[in-house]
Length: 615
Figure (cartoon, rainbow, N blue to C red):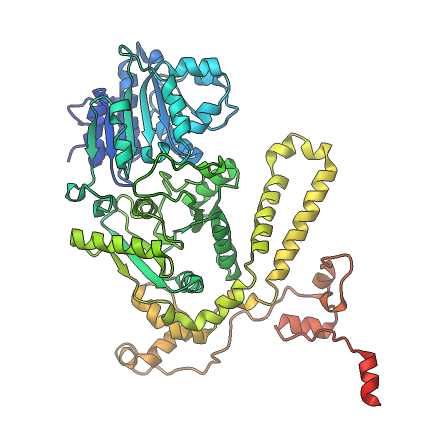
């Protein structure tokens, strides 16, 4: 097998090869083997390759090689890399840094991730990475125009997205500033996992005799439904749900019974739905992070870092792009914040074991990009999609995915071995939990999160803003505390949801064990399996005897943190409170709270009615 060292007759610069080998990249992928030589030769390239195939290195390696090979004219060689999101800007920038780590100051690179970025330093760089929105709205117009007029190579990553969804008008402005005369042309490189027909129509305008590096199988050229656009070791499942409650039920079982592998990405169709999932999982003591366009860029970057490091095991993403199989250039998102809602596109989430489509994607194209976050490289992965039978788009998408399986003679997407009717014993827990997930609580949760970010902002603290405006900090803290207490009150009386009774585990665990053989079980659950499956009992442990235990017993039922001192610390939510809402401080009531006994509240007696009864 060919390595980077002997690639095409040792044409790659040794400093680049050394940097790649130090990171463990010894052998190029198929798309890299096909594209690197073409880019080095200066040809226009259209890369259509599956997610996780190494498209980023496929254009970064030859671009850096060309810059090093032309050191005399390197100061005049300019490369512009355009990507759809600021998260992807940082990712490509980090990859570039790793490739040129042994090149000294031969190549200057910069990333533009703010509208206020200055071109004073950027204008001296060889490679600039940015989003179309930030390029157009950046300052120093003269230096920007001068630099763009000298661009010798244009790279558009996720090209099908950048020529639609609101980016089209920014792309047109940038293309007008690039050199377009007969004697001064620039090299074009377009990359994506799903190139639409509309994008290929741009060949005559932007690309000059392009060469298509198509790693998608030619067996299904007319459709993006090709199985090769997804890793072969990816297992795909779907669950038919009659209503939204059944989707919540399946979400609970998948995570609480450890059916779905962790790390997991959950996709929702809206920001409010993403926060609803976060609140829902929190009620059952399942921690999760959330990627939302309402969060600032620095916070989103920190969340991605925590997820990649393993600090966060479950990440919820709001996918509000609503991509279509054939993207119309008239589909433009009006909100600038909506342009930040494509964090899943192109981002290299590391070590993702599973993807859960809580809300079904609107198209096969979107489905491919979503499940492409897992089973990358040589890793295995699982993708589960909830199909709502009452929504026509969900049913239509499922039919298209099943048709793909028949066409490719492959298993592809299959129904999960159990459904909502098999785990209906948990319905009462789900219905009780959903009572507290209201639009008001979702809005409170979002406000709480934003206020917490403002109060902990290092920029505001170091800049001395709060020291100059102490009253604003006091108001923020007061309202933030009020939101915390209000959200806590909404969950009062539902602490039992965090614990699963043994008798329910005994009912569901045999079903789950058939799907996920490696999931953990309590001793009581194992005893239930021996009871229900006597053959396994005789083979494994013939003299095993069941011990006596209470089916309704739960672990950690006693709370040791409740005391008179902790009760006195609680403050009423409002200025005046009724007696039955005040915290209990008597010894008898504190004992009842510790042992989760029902606490009798004050009852108001109508004295006039009592007197009438006596008469």
